[in-house]
Image (cartoon, rainbow, N blue to C red; front, side):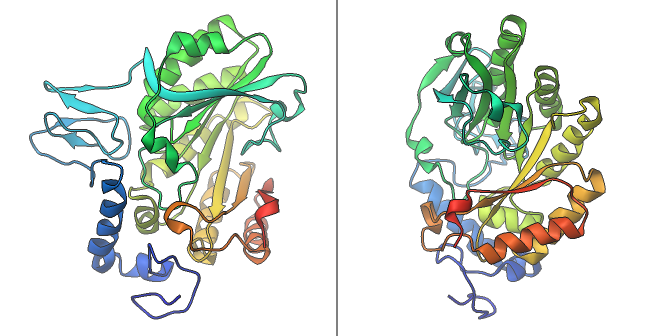
Length: 345
């Protein structure tokens, strides 16, 4: 279809009918329309329509959104609430999540560089948190918005049994439940010392808490998997409803731990190759960013499948995947990978 702003022909969704160039270059002009797109999506799930910024509200500093929440209302994640002048919701003791065991090796963003891919006979404790700080129009797990399964830290700790090789906190996103995942990590590291502890995240968490995640991952031979969706903040807001500034800061932060562990990488970055939106400019800027920090950072390109409000797009093309690999190579990034190869067309 054609970009509604410049009439450029391209692979764009009816749900976000603008090309990435117009989103980047004319963001102030397009933002009211982009904002309304996300408001419509969130209304269906009875989530806060915009990031709360009430001057009299209580401030939540857990993530990039820095919600200022009015009494009785929820933050953008729909999980944390201002009740009586205090931010309440999931804490160290409980969270909304679903968990299950995956036989190792399993389908993991970091499987090509992680020791878990060699742990035959063991299993991964997959912890899917039912909440998120973003509002991705292409969300592959959007059904979590209709679920709220309360689970205690102790219950989850007990699920990490003698044949559990690793635990991965993902979702949704683990950010709204950061304290709960830290408590589970603490219990596991104290009593199940041979279990790797990993987080897979959009990187929106406050750097203060990301540092704590990274330290548990480092000690347990786990890793932090950060989804670097876009480089441009404007495009990230258009696609995901929120800024990616914390994502960039947290990639820099976790990269500081790379030299502390020689063989297994503590940081893995992934980028979903969304047709029409993750263009050459975005991939080039991400490559520049990664290479300027540490060329050893593994970078995985993930094949896209049409889903949620982007169900009118195609799967990722081999041409787009090859372009991503070549750009990474041009900037000297040493370890790249294409995931979901079966989706490429």
